[in-house]
Length: 287
Ligand code: B12
Image (tube, rainbow, N blue to C red):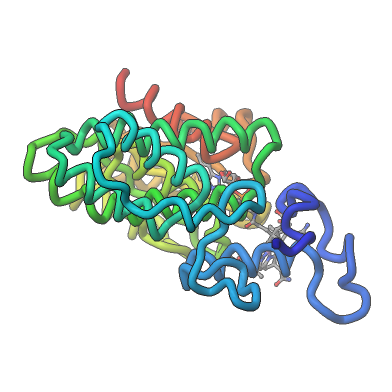
């Protein structure tokens, strides 16, 4: 069972904090939905439903936990498909287990990453784009991806698999919104990028310092407030002043940010959502 408030709308598309419910003094629908998504990310707990603490949400309200235990004798392809499927279900408990099993079967880490995890996340991204999945479901799938990445990361490093590139990510100074940024970070990480997350309220000097230290391919800037959007321009100007602008691509995003704004401030790329942010990152890092 799921709380209807989560599945009945896409809260980030609403405008105005009092569009539903807020007038009574209680939290608005947006606040509740976002708080639930944040809880999921912070605690690995599925929406705080009574009796559901041990289990993640699975696809379309159906509890699939019972049939996801490791089965002996899975063929490698079948196992990869199961990982992909469980990732799409947001099964963050079994996805890392199955990933371990795939490694134990001798499947190459890079194959698990591309054919199971990234393949699953691609489906999630596509369904999200078509409004068939909602933000909390995407966040749980991303969490499943993160859990599997924790298993895979050391193996990928061991086997010398090159990452797709490095991204330094942060929400600009004065802005505390980080849900969208985190989603972008997770999907980028899930598709092979090394992500260094500087957090929220990040001053231009910190972005500059991080570029100097880590030499990333991309700096990703997030802003959710019209009042903090100008900080993005300041970051770019600071990179120019530090003589680092030529060495790094700048990608910007956040609800009020537009393609035109990105061009005006001299950014290299803009994306309206996490899925297209990954595509944009790929374009920027293969140029
Ligand atoms: C949650 C929320 C909060 C939470 C933030 C919690 C957190 N940890 O993030 C809290 C309660 C703290 C908060 C505070 C405030 N908020 Co607020 N908040 C929201 C809310 C409801 C949802 C934002 C969200 O998470 N959306 C979901 C994510 C997934 O979407 P997203 O952030 O847009 O990210 C996607 C894309 O934009 C893109 N993206 C994002 N970042 C990046 C980066 C890159 C590089 C790329 C490529 C793409 C990209 O990909 C993401 C994933 O698809 C919005 C309303 C709304 N419906 O958007 C208001 C909203 C953003 N807040 C608003 C305001 C005014 C405030 C406050 C000033 C309120 C106040 N008076 O105190 C404060 C400011 C605090 C501060 N200094 O930052 C306004 C902004 C208005 C404006 N035009 O500036 C909004 C629009 C509400 C409204 N309609 O009035 N808020």
